Length: 248
Image (cartoon, rainbow, N blue to C red):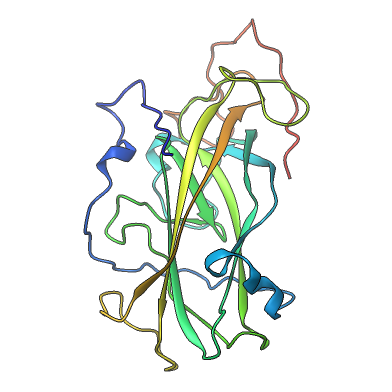
C-alpha cells in the first residue's frame, strides 16, 4: 500500500528509502499531547486504540531545504498556506485496558521532502530516534486521562503539483500521493517515570497505515534554497492561476 514519490534531485536530498532500520530508539524532547475532552470507553471501539481525526483539506506550509529536518518548534516558513494536504488533522490515542500504561508512537511517510509535525514539532524518521515520540502515560479505560490527542500539521521542502480545485481532492497529475504509517507501542509499566527507549517491555499495539495527497494552491513557487521568511523565487508560473488556501 506504500506509494513512493522520488525527488527530482536525489543526490541533493535524502529520500524516504534511507530510513534507518533497527536504529536506537533515543527519544527527543516533545511536549505531551493535549488530553482529549472525553476519555470514555467509546474511543476504545476503534482498532488498536487509535482514532484518526477527520481527514480533509488541511493547510500545507513551505520551509526551506536547510531547515527541512529541524525538530525545533515554530520552524520559519518561507510561505504559510503554500498548499493543502488531504490527511487527518489529529490523532487520538486511548488506553483500552483496565490498568494505566505508557505509550509511544512513530509516524513515517513515503513522500520525499515532506514533513509531519506532531504538536508543532517534526521528528526525522531517518534520525537517531527513528521517528519515535516521547512516551506518555494514559489512565485506565474510562478514567479521566485515558485518552490523549495530538495535533498534526504539515510542511514541504520541495515543490508540489499545482491545483486550484476548490473542493475535495485534485485529480491525478495535480497532486502527490503519500502513505503515512503509524506504529503505536505500549509498555505495561505503571511507574511514574517513563520506561527507557530501549526497554524490552515495549510491545507493538497498533500498526496503522493511511493514505493521503499533497498539492500546491499558490503561485509563484517560493525559493526552497533560501531560508529568508517570505523569500519568493524570481520566476513566475504564467500558466497557473493563484488559488487561495482552503485548509484549516
